[in-house]
Length: 439
Image 1 (cartoon, helix red, strand yellow):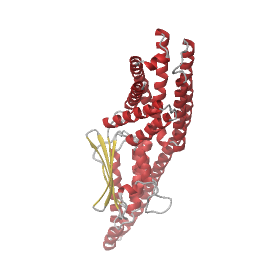
Image 2 (tube, rainbow, N blue to C red):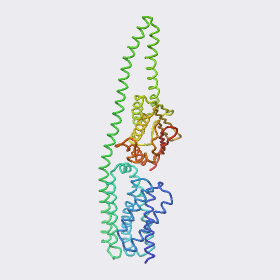
Image 3 (cartoon, rainbow, N blue to C red):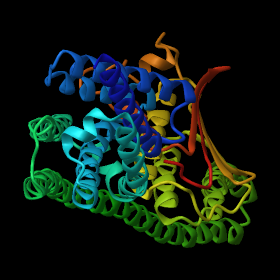
Image 4 (cartoon, rainbow, N blue to C red):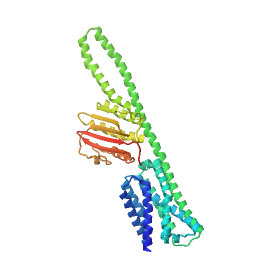
């Protein structure tokens, strides 16, 4: 009996580990999957040997938290209970097929090693396409929603899944040692399937509601950025009108000096008023003109808005964009939020120095796009790790959220390499975005 329990526990651990592999590969290294296999098998043995159904809660819950820790992706907390539910449904459907075709009872199935192996292998084979489809749905529709959802709501959804898994286990376990008819077997399998579908339908309904809310917030954010860009274009237009007016006044002044042949005063007027204005305009135009190489409206708008703000505060702005930037493998809203925070911080930090400077470099490196934002700053003794913690700031109450928000954004992407440096009096943010997104 002990051997059969151990054998059954190993098969359970193997099935759930296969679920984790299909749903997460290549997020985890091989040794992590081994850890899951040992953990799941051990807890399954403890649950079966000592007849402790509540251990199932611990098994699924602990390993789900472990998966989040290993993968550093919050949404993976759903994978193990969801995989368990799918396995339970398929085990019962396959068992029903065996019961109808070969009259194999639940009792026979649980007491024969060969039948256990065949049932487990068939379950793994059937679950592979189902779990792969689940993974695709997560990638396409759900990951970004989970990352922005309230943590309490996520905890509630996970609890609902765990409760569903527990009730399915209790329902199936009730018939483990009973001789039941084909009809009773069909009713048991149907109950497991229907309860699973009902639970997942509730969760999908909640997620659809969250998705609509999330998309509404995205539209608001997009319109906000577009509104700022439009305001800056209007400001540029007003500056051009003002310059045109000043231009005619300057020409009239120059003409007056020339007509009066007052060349000494003309020279003084030129060097005091015209030349500084010309240099100022040249500096502003030469800096911002480099943004013409960026052909992504959202990115260009946020960079133009923030850098024009810097120029108008007499910050030295240096922009280097040697390549044409046509696409970036990152969500536009996430991209504008990230660079908006980086540039706001750069402007605020450099204004505290004697010589405020903000540098921007955007270029291509093979298939990757590299962004480097650097600024002068005063070192207040905070480490880079401390700066990314929520609430840690040198600015006072109400601050310390920006870099933490950037960290949460970057955690959604596996195609982005990010590094923060403090070197030679400059605070440097380096972001490298590869062409394809790997989830």
